[in-house]
Length: 488
Image (cartoon, rainbow, N blue to C red):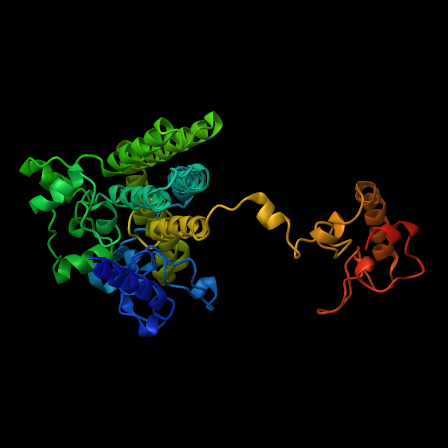
């Protein structure tokens, strides 16, 4: 058995080492690495989201299509174009049904335009407010995960003689932070199960209702047919699936789904409680920080669910949609007397602007979905993973170990002397240097402003040369004050 343990350990080490060279690695793909690493153009990239904000497009914003509402505007624009063409033909082609003047005075355009502008402003402002609020709560979740991660890794003490066990316990607790963020992402997208690639390995050892529901097999979704998939991409309501259909099906089957993020948080709270009882987290201040972070994590879940489940009241949504469509449909009657056949392209252009704002508000209203303009929750979860990896990549070190270093230059940029050099000097010498630093800073700033060729204190030194703002690191000058003799 000891030999087998070593072989498993060696295999794990080879797997981790192989991840540094992915071309030679056979490890399981990392689910926290963003999936959009392709550089070639694919049609699906224009419809699937959220958008990868790490990618940089060299096209001007005016010509960019990914993230645009153009696909969802195709059917409405065809309808508006056909409607405008019909109005123009009935009014301008006399040989069809005789003279039929459908033009009306444009005073209606002025009166109703203000109402439409106010309605669209309300729709856009409330939608973006929900978008910004969702981002703010995910930022708070990241902050609380960082705080609790530091407390667990740095401040929870190891039990005497059980260092390896304690390290594994800490890593398990930190994995629960990652599992919580990933589970919250899936919950906000109405995916309450545990079989997802980025979640299953993190919660397999936990006894949760979501795991029980997953094992019951009611989560299997059906693949949409071609026409339904195209309809969803074009934004047709009759082709759009109910996002809560998976939850609805589980309730019909009588399978409890529970609240996976909350259940994970209960496991995490029990870990903190155990550490307090074992006195391995003895400081009352750190205990308060840990419990405050857990409360903040729970607060993020409650508030993101509030944003998700509190859309604009349906009465407002219906009224705004009706007002906007009525305005667009009446627009060709008011443009016809002055524009003639130009009414067709003019009405289509106006409809694109007006309906575009309406559709943007509808798309941004739920910031947690899979649309192109939704929040990149995968990226946020990946950031939490990277932050926790940065915390755990090195053990906790005593402060004296990194302070007493030959590379520690405490008085940079005024001096390149290291820690040991200043230790050999008297306390009075250090005190005099600290007292003289403000005078030296003021002199250097004055010298940089009066130097020929400098504007507003900008240094004209080339890269690789000594910065003129720090003359103590260059050769002495005749204008250098006397205080510099103490700073070496």
